[in-house]
View 1 (cartoon, rainbow, N blue to C red):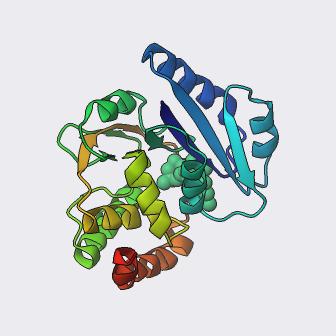
View 2 (view 1 turned 120 degrees about the vertical axis):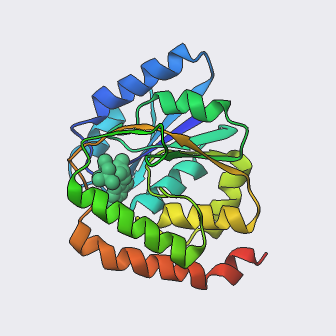
Length: 230
Ligand code: UDP
Ligand code: MG
């Protein structure tokens, strides 16, 4: 069984179409699967729409907690031996699912910076901010990946359970925390190139979110002992 986890914050406009698309893609893979949508305290009609969708498992809570918390909640509710999380806007082309399932690694992360990645529609400012933040992440955490922030990742159930048992970051830097914990525990992590069609409808605010993001990155470093403790 494969679990697909979608964190959803004010995604009411996209959910019907995009969950149907995921369903169609998964059906042709001929594998058992479930789609789990986590309503991260949305203020639009996300909750109402999720209740109407019979083909998905809907979970959620009232207050907006951040993408990292939403993914953690999704993982807690997942039954699959492999868990994939991805963004509700389907910016990552779904063909990444098959590619990730074919890899023999406990963690597979989508990357927009490999030679064969195909990235469309990312603005100059988003490209610049990705470049700078990935550089800072590499320097501060020692991680080697050039795109930690791609919204598409696969984790084995074991890796996911270990990681969320240590997870402290609730917002945008949670991907970095996942990869940092994985490195501490020698969990095999591989990258795959993705096709990325950027959706400009974004919940990221480059000005407001940058400082909390880098504070989270610094905390990840400080938490090293905690991650390694029993
Ligand atoms: N998201 C969330 N909680 C938040 C912010 C975002 O669950 O507080 C989800 C959002 O619904 C989407 C994913 O995280 O599925 C990525 O968000 P977005 O597409 O806005 O980010 P971007 O593509 O601009 O990086
Ligand atoms: Mg997006």
